[in-house]
Length: 610
Picture 1 (tube, rainbow, N blue to C red):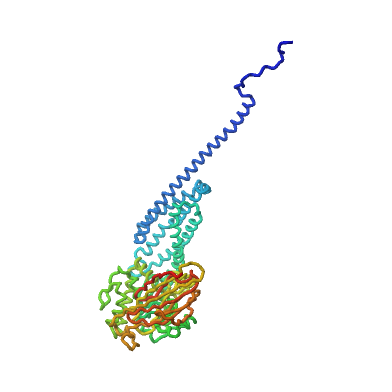
Picture 2 (picture 1 turned 90 degrees about the vertical axis):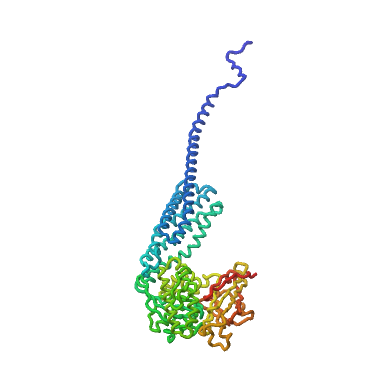
């Protein structure tokens, strides 16, 4: 058959069909069902992420604004505390504490903590959180702490009736201890949330805070050790007896000078009262027990250390305290619980330059700046050979000046003056109770040599007059320190140089002159032993006086190497003592303290040694 079969398939279409096949439609429906939830999930995640970012941003703004308010308020708070405007300070402290707490809470929220796991961003957020936590830890108790401080020192540490608020001091102890712990916590917060990737702008704000906390951690730890001992020192547990030894660096010793007068002060439940006064005339016939200080001291200073003139010839005020207590006990006077050493320079520092002038009998009205000159020179001019009258005047004046210190209420200015007196060596305290003495040592007011291992790259210079005179009143010392240019454990060289000038006038009171001299120039020539204390790992290459090598006595005192040499200082002729040192570069002295002359020593750094 020639026609097409009925069963033949249709011819294929020339164009594809526009309709999808059933299979394609089924696949599309399945894909749509899968993409629907995915789109919903992605949308939800986007919303969550947006909310998260918004929450972190809001928290960041809140924290930033709060911390900015804290930073702005801190200078005013510091000024209010320094000026003892405690009402203002407490109000400012509450605001600072509230803002710090707000910043801390803002950075503790969950979105913030989760965001800290984001690379790089997390470093910045952790740094901010560390700063906020540190601020909150430090400022939370501040209002209550200032309220306690106002109670204790708001009207001066000593009230008008010469009484210290012992209960207030007792309340202060846990505050100080708490702050020591809080500073440690704040330092940990800052250190634990810092990384190398922290932005410079954040580091610039947080680094000074870290440095300040590091700086106050040590003193605050010391305060936490010392303040709990103060109530007992103030007679909270029963009356305490203080012996104030008034020293005179016109006849110099390493601990200020010879003891010329004394006063007994009673402290009972915070109430301070002057019991009796006296002069060294009461003590000349008696001797201290040198063995009470120890065999090393006895070997260094011998039996002469038992005399009242030599109680202060050792390197540390604690030894002088033991000897002074022993001597007054031998003289039949009460055994003191505490001995305080202070000289006219220290009294003037305690009173401060702004203090009202003192009425000093025949000398009329005397400004505090002139007090040392009146006590160490003018009194000798006026009384000349009448030593009984002069010592009565010195005793009465010393007691009056000390009473003026108490009458000031131990104000902030007085406490700052006490710090200057302690730092310059013109005020030192010793307690017969070991725990209290340890606190005084920790506070830096005990005037001791201390542990050379903890002292660092330092040295100390002392002078001891070896003739009966008051010529040291005029001595003007200058110290030059030449330390190695390099740092590190490698061996190096360095030097110390002491220049002594004695600008004594042509005419001086006979009692101040060298009574053993045979010439007029000799009568105005000071003669002293120069003592140098250096760490034992620092070696001594040579000692010279005016460029000529001399033999020096080299001994050990309280773990320090003690180098002693004798010099004569004629009028207006500089005398130069030079010590050439060798040892590890980091151990060679870079700082020097002393001597405790009437004129403060000038200490300068010379060119470093290669």
